Length: 535
Image (cartoon, rainbow, N blue to C red; front, side):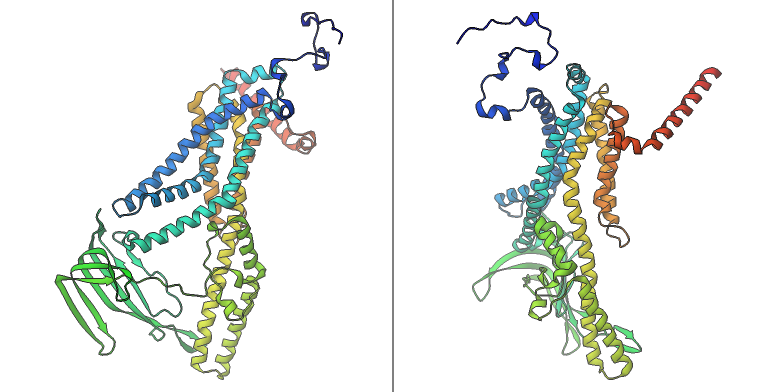
């Protein structure tokens, strides 16, 4: 191979890459092999590293704040209660997994502002622009990082987050089984808040407090009996329909209580509350009298009732515990596919019923209502038949109202699953122009601006989500309102504070805006000139 004459670069005028000699290379061009084409440019890696450092710091800061609140609550509930340490670690893992989808968007806004402010404050962006690096190229690095965070939060929201939420609820149920005293809130009654349709008894428990060793003070347990007959009636077309009733049949009052575990006659361990220094008041249904049992100088064991799985006609689903595919599947069942496919409504299959969504259930409720009115007016139906039909009508009507609320909750949850990940991209879209604006104000101003915009975002997100549950408000408005507001603010700052321009096709349609803005600017300039002349 003949030797070629080497070219002295000092004698060349280089205006573009094509003016360089064919064999010209720099050190960074050597090696790499096949993977060389996939290697990102040095400048892109440098900018991404500038974003990564403040991102990790901000993520750690916000996550520790959330975790500190969870740890404080956990310590208050579990320390000294005999819970296995590794179970607590599992619980902390679930809390950590549910915290990341909230803290990652916060860290995106904070890191974007700080990185852009640092690059601009040290005049590195000016140097890049002077070297021929375009503004969109610099900006694209922030958007790339935002896209990666969007994908991570999307995975957490679609799959991992719901799984963690479900396990946290299972953990809470396990706590109630392992030590029922942990579920007791001092100064409040806790127990059976609602009853099944055919339940015969209910109970609540009150405690003045629980010490570090698990001892209760000022304990009161109430048990009542539920019956189909009662003194409460509803009048339907001048017909008295009984609504059922209840009465307290036992009250246990004690100054002290302690959870104990003992064997029952079957050889199984069961939990009881050993009560001391108290008395029992019971209502005898046979003699219609009251009996009092005194154990002021003794003790008695109250067996903690175990909850049995009962099948009831009710929707037992929480949208935050389902992955996105299951969320969409249950929402489809609520809309039209069949209510019998929803967890908690398996009784419909056993009854041989197939209800095609909310519309199908509404038709059944209206049909029952017409049958009741017809039977009451014609006099052909007995009072027992009307009472039975009214019970079925009440239950199905309650199921209809519950189905509508559940469908709204599922629609809002679906929108939240998509809106939250997209906020990462929007925050990076906002953070770059904000960082350029605060370049001379230091990190304190960057932190302040980030907090202000986070407050604006979550104010719209929380308030909007709350009003989305109303019937006359669209389901999407709440979860997406925050993203829409932040996007509009981002676009305005980008156009007014940087040299970024909208596409010509959009600018031509916004001519009225630019004309109005020019008139307003001219009016302000004239006012300034008048004040200057007056001085």
